[in-house]
Length: 332
Image (cartoon, rainbow, N blue to C red; front, side, top):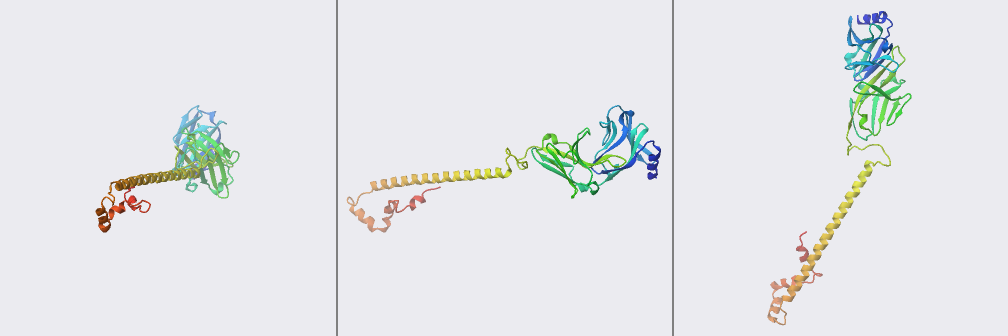
C-alpha cells in the first residue's frame, strides 16, 4: 500500500520528481530542487504516512528560510528550494514531499543507514595550538564522488570549507582522499577558539534525478585551553619541541645536583678545618698545663710505668700520625 501511494504521488502531483536519497545515522542531508523559492509564499515539508502526509513545516513567509528543530527549508544563492535534515535517526527514513503551496512539489524517498563504519566521535576535544586529524572511512560506492567538509553554526548556516575537487587546502585546513583505503582525512593545524563549531564530512551526489549532499558524520569540535602535557605537533623556528624541553630540564636538574654536591663538600671541608684548629689548640693547652719531668720526676716515672695512665699521652699525639679521634667527634 505504501509503495502504491508513493507511485501515485509521483504520477499525479504535478511536475514532481521522485527519487531515493541516502542518509546516514548521526549525519545530515541537504536536498536540492529546481523549485524557485520566491514563486509562492507558502512553504512546506511533510512526511507520507499511510494515506496522509503529516506536516513537519508549513509556513507563509517571504524570508529566505524557515526552520523547525532538525528540519530546515531555505533558498540558496540561486533562489532554489533546499531541504536540510540534521542528525539523522533511523526513524527519519521514509517518503517526504516538499515545495510551495500545492504546486511545484518534489517527492523523495529517504533511506537512513548505519554510519558506525565511519569511526568518528560525535565530540572531538582539542587544545589550543594543537594539530588534529579527522579521519572517516566512507562506503566504497562513493570512491569517485567529490568529498566535502563543511561547517554548520547554531543557526544551521552551512559553509563549505574544503572539497577534494577544487579546494583541498584552505589556510590551516587541508583535506585528502585515500581512495584505495576509502578514507577521508581532514587536517586542522594550530587550532584556535574560532574552530569550535560543528563539522560535516560527506559527498556530493549530483548525477541522479535528485541532487543532494549526504554527510557521513557530524562532529562537534570542543577547544580546551593550552596544556603542558600535550604539545602542538607543528614544527617551526619559533616553536620548542617536547624533546628540547626535556633536554633543558635534564640539564637544569644536573646543574642543580652538581651545585648541591659542591656546597656539601665545601661545608664538610670547613667543618673539618674548624675541628682541626680546635684539636690543635686543645693539644697546645694540654701540653702547656702538664708539668715537666724535670719538676716532677716521680709523676713522670709513674706515668710511664703504669699502663693505665698512657691515655693522656695518646690524646696529644700529632694529628698527622693519628686522626681518628678528630673524625669521631665530628657530627655531619
